Length: 391
Image (cartoon, rainbow, N blue to C red; front, side, top):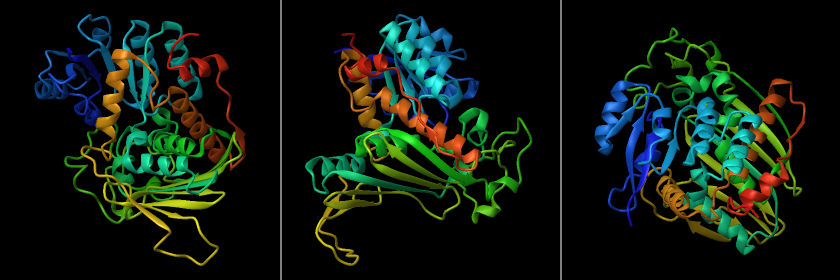
């Protein structure tokens, strides 16, 4: 079997996803790179052994020697790049989120439907060991039928990762209840078996709004991802625009009746996610999300709190970034790009996570007023549920 030939657009912080797809001689290889930064283009082309390195992504789209495109650029560029690639018949991988508005997501889905080109969205958390373990526990019925889901996200490095570059500018992201939460909302939907129908949220910019910022067009400080400032109020060199919230609380009612909540804070001392799923016969909770961490189940009672739980599962060992999720998702994408078929990730689910985040952000900025999430065209839903095959 010859390698699937991949072109990567955007080689900044998200280049790990491309690295996970590069297995020359074993099924897939990065053969073309695109980035606005000439030094990045040179370095990454050399790293991948790619013979093609361009500044303008459109120079990749018409090439017969590329089978698929990986879009790993900033969020506000996903719509234009993905639609252009779909229109020339390329299979397209879009790093999450799919878009920064409901309209941009729907436009991408419509382009995939109209062209028949294969669309895949990079929700790699569906391939993380801890998420798949929780999904299996629920599917077995260990906690009965899910009725409530609570997610807490402690973003200890948030001031460095999300407030020193374009992520802090709402025109580029809508807000961190979309940009950062899209993964967790997607997982929440997957575990609960439904999509958000009604949402409200509260939040604010409590810590990073008044800290020192860089002048426009000033590069980020060297070693900004290896030398972290503490406490949060000591952070400096923030992006010149900071107008997204650093703490938020989101409440959801799903279309199957499940009630859910998501909380995000960017000035905590630790970095991890905590999921709690409560069903008709018990609850589960994860303690850490990496290999060797635990998911605990309580399904007898009633009683006081019992730290030992009724069942304790270990998160399986895995290699690679994001708990092995990056490697597994790129394996699935390459298989899908080559052969088609149903995938564990879902463009419809990706759109629904964005829609929930968009409406939650609108609610937050309107004082917590509830909003209904707009439905997706049933024709598109059916198309993607069939594995992107026309009836």
